[in-house]
Image 1 (spheres, rainbow, N blue to C red):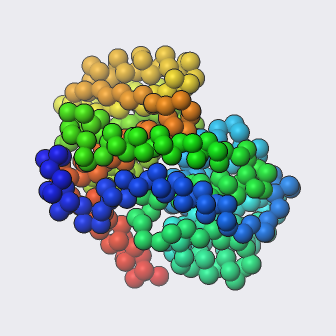
Image 2: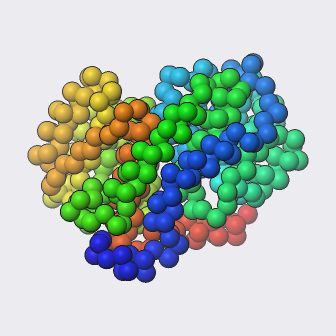
Amino acid sequence: MLDDLVRLAKLDERGILNILGRFDRQIEEALQIGLSSELPLEGGSVRNIVISGLGGSAIGADFLRAYLGRAFRVPVMVNRGYTVPGFVDESTLVILSSYSGNTEETISAFEEARAAGARLLCIASGGQIERMAEAAGCPCIKIPTGYPPRTALAYSAIPILQALTRLGLAPDYSAEMRDSVSWVRRKINLFGPECPVNENQAKNLARSLFRKIPVIYGSHDRLDVVAVRWRCQLAENSKQLAYSASLPEMNHNEIVGWKHPSLGLRQVVPVFLRDREDHPRIQIRAEITREVLADKAGAVLEFWTDGETWLERLWTLVLLGDYASVYLAFLNQEDPSQIDAIEGLKNRLKESA
C-alpha cells in the first residue's frame, strides 16, 4: 500500500507529503524571514528568555533548546500555558509563538508578560497575536500562512534563532543552517513516497508501529525533544496514541512499570533514539534499558542519528518521524491532515467563553 502513490494521494487531502517534500525550501525561506524581519529591540540587559507557545508552535522552541544546548548565553525556558513564570520582569525577553496567531493560551501569556513589563517579541502568521503586537508596539515576525502548524517547524524555529542571534543572545548558526539544506533534501529523497518500502526506513518504521503503542525514549535535553516531536506527530498525523520520556529520568521510575499488564505490554513498542554524542553514562543506560525492555515488549526499536553536524543529525530523526507518522496514518486509513478532535475541543471552549 505504501508504494501505491495514487492511493496515498486519495488519503492525503491537504498534501501533507507535498509539504514534507519541500521542507528544504522551508528552511531557506525561514532563513530569509529571519534576516528581513524588523527587530527594534535591545538584548544587552536581557537576563532570561521565555518562549511561550503550544503544540506545533512550541516544538520549534524545543528544537532550538536541543540544537543550541549550552550555547544559549542566558537561561531559556519553553512555556506551555496561560500564564508566565513569576520571575518574568523587565529583564526578561518573552517570545510569543502562535502559528495561527489565535492560540488562547498564548494570548493570555502575552497579556501577563506585558503587564509584568517584559520585552515582547511575537511570531505568527497573522491573527490576534499580530494585532496585539501592533497595538503594543512590539515586533512581530510574520511567517507564511496556510500550513498545519506541526508542518511549519522551520518557520517556527529558525526566525527565532536569528532574532536571538541579532540580539546577541545566541551564536550565529545561519551558515550551518544553510549548509544543512542539501542534507535535508537527501533525506527527503530517502524517506519520501517515491522511495519503495524495501529501501525506505520511514515506511518500515510505520509498519513496525502499526497497531502498536510506541513509547519513545531520548537523551535528556537532546533527543528527548525529538521523542516529543515523534509523539506529537504520531498523535496528530497517525491518530495513534504514543508516549515519550527521557533517559536517565525513566530509569528512576518508569522502568519499574514495565511489568503489568504483561499481555498488554506485548502491544507496546519501546523506541530508543540515539546519538553518538549523548552523555557516555546515558549511552550505557540506553543499552541496559533496551535489554531489560526486550524481555517485556514484543519488539524494541532503535534509531541512531545520521550526519556530520549536530543539526544534520537532528534533521534526520525529525524527518524520519514526520514521514513515518504520515505513512502510519495511511496504514490506519486516516487523512493525516485531519484534527477533528482538536477543532471540536476549540469549538466547545468558544461556547464556554
